[in-house]
Image (cartoon, rainbow, N blue to C red; front, side):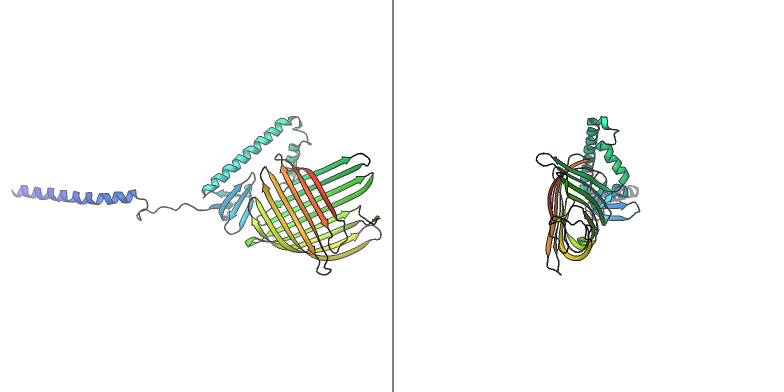
Length: 363
């Protein structure tokens, strides 16, 4: 009897232990099935992208766009950055980044298709140094990280009068993290009945440095050599040197739109090269506006307007440049430009208004 009683007690103890384990099992299974349970922490998804420079520096933010050769990155601390693809890489942390990369791939595929079409349509000029493809590639190899455009406009009219109207110009620009440099040159020539009425050489440069909170500084020297200016039918040829030193604020800073306004001090030096020679100097204050807009159908609208006012003489004047460009291919662009200059204070230079149709090669 004692033997059976001890066996019954052991069986009862085992059954009690199994019942206790079964009562605890559902709560453990529920905790394992519920990912929000405190016992199972979940790693939070990254809410930013990381721009990693080749030297190891990292910037947090989000990737706006990946073009053929540039990262367009909106950083948390430094605003909009434009970085060459070769100088950095992006670690994706946002779903939108994948979409930006896909758009870039589509753009690269389209550019590749256009180049293939150009090669097919003009294969007989493939090895000619005068073909647009070969010329553009040669310019890119020569200027390296600098981008730009060579453009021209021409008009020849024959009738009661013979008129030749020519314009050649070149643009170069380069962007760093916080600096933007532009170099421009232009030559205008107009001949009517073998009499030169316009013969002007212009050159200018611009250096803009961006500061935090969308402020910037600008320095822009310009030179103009007019070899056909007349005052009351008397030659008054001149060389004008202008220096613009100013600062401003970026009102709009988006990947496809930008608007900047500012104020500047302008230093003018005018040398009259025709007899009798002379030299005059003056200063004038100015307000300026700069706009860059990327439009549909691969069009771009740019404008720069300046209003001058001289505190010393109370004289005022203004100039404006408005241009609409259309990219036909990766290398060929056409555009319409309107320029006007009226009464720059303190200097006696030629006022003008022009409307030009331009054709250019981009590189």
